[in-house]
Figure 1 (tube, helix red, strand yellow):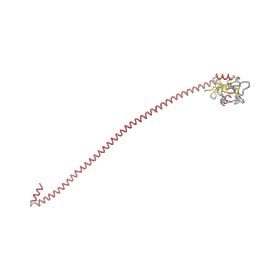
Figure 2: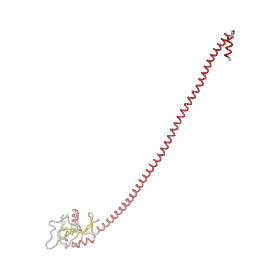
Figure 3: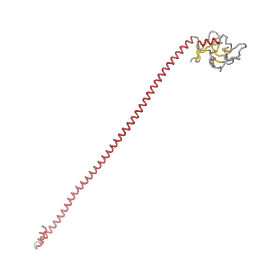
Figure 4: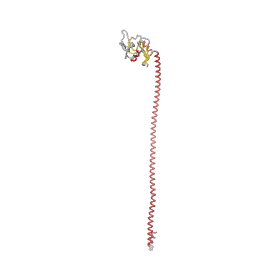
Length: 273
């Protein structure tokens, strides 16, 4: 509508220049207005775009933050699940280990209790044995005192009795047997010295009455260590000398063979078992 008016006015001669000028001015103003409008549009567009871009950036940041949060949550959840699984496994393993430890401790406790029981029983047995030995010792001491009061002498695990009367070898042995003893058996250097200390010509438990020349002790053991006097045993013409005596007692080697019917003192020996 405005463009037609402009063309009609241009055809009029009188107002052409004015119209042209006016139109030009209008055109200039319009151009300016267009540029101004364009600037305004650009400004508006810029202002409009900046919030959009800013909003998009904020949206991207929010999305990234949400994604990170979900990842962190997932990892946390996975960690919790893993921890729960480990705790369950650990609980089972710990329970098995505790049960094993408990069983071992129970077994060791039972073994210790059994050992203590055995030790207690052994201690009781030892105590009983000690009491028995003490009683036996007391009994032996009482017997020793009683025998010593009857003329017995203690030496090296044996008791010795020297008669105060004289009898034959067989009668002397019978007397020893009645006393729970037998004629002395001399089987050591110390015992030979001890029997000589009685200073009596006495029968000992040695004879060859079973086999001439084979001397044996009264317990049946053969003679191995002897203390015969010089030239003894030698026998005597016309009589048997089948029994042994200590004579003379002043010599260390003081055994002599003599007839068993002679009357002599004797020495009895009672071995203390």
